[in-house]
Length: 416
Image (cartoon, rainbow, N blue to C red; front, top):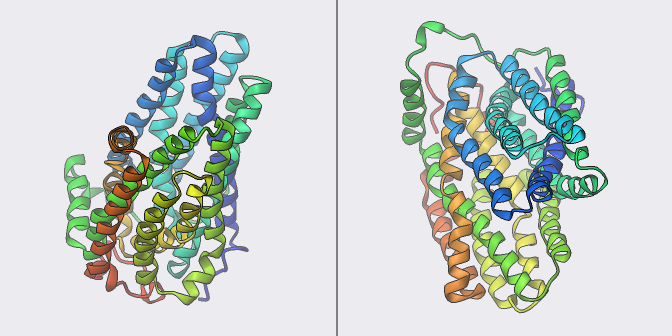
């Protein structure tokens, strides 16, 4: 059968639109959490505590999320996550309106969202292969990349504006977005997983071990687990260094926010260009090109540390990111057996983001010790090493065209 194009694919459209709204609402409340703590307590340390606890919770829930998604019905898991997040953030909005909000309540709401978020995202990614054809997975992932950049661009700005009108508004908006997402998932009629054989279940540790063994054994998945962590850590580090550099140039917080938005625009434009790039450039070349473009253009930033133009190389470097990410994660979905989708995604996300929380600390130490220019060069050097590894990787260079891949069975992973 000819695959249904993504635009008239009703199930994909429902999921994409609802999650765009949900990510927008979450972006608004993400900024509102520290603003609320500052308004109630006046303590920057307590505001930071909420973010730290939320981040630790998200990382801690990443591996269990994969096992939950592979053990239970994905639709019900997604519905439960949205209902739980709606109750948490909606309840917080109600407490703010009544003047009863306390620090522990804010922490509890953020922790619930941080725990449910990885579970929902893992379930959504695993379910995607049942909503679109295998050949359309990179295109679907590219559209998902675009919605993420759009939410990064608009959500925090809306959250700040709404918080200025009424403290409860960003959280109320987030709760409404979860309601919309809940009913959108409920209306998806396609099955979101293959038949589950309960007799194959074992201890959770053994099930996670099965996914880790697949990631280690498969050349492509192993390559992603090795080369993606330094890339993400370096990008996070450079974003932090950029804020420090711009602040030391005397740029106001508002203008620094504009600079951050400009970087998000680069990713958003890249998402729109993804279909064109993927028609003209093979997936291995796209992925390797992203590493080299980041290494070269971030090194070029060192020449502009005394100017506001320091932002521009990063804007252009991120144009390739959505296409490369779509190629990586679309291919991962295509070659992973359905019963392992959740666990493999969780293992990869843990590898990819495991060292990322240390990046701002590393960036701060580099700037304080050797200055902004040296910190930028150090990040570029890390990316250059990752680019060499990507170029030499058999798992990346030997990727098959995704149109040639069928849905893998639950018996054996697709050979790469």
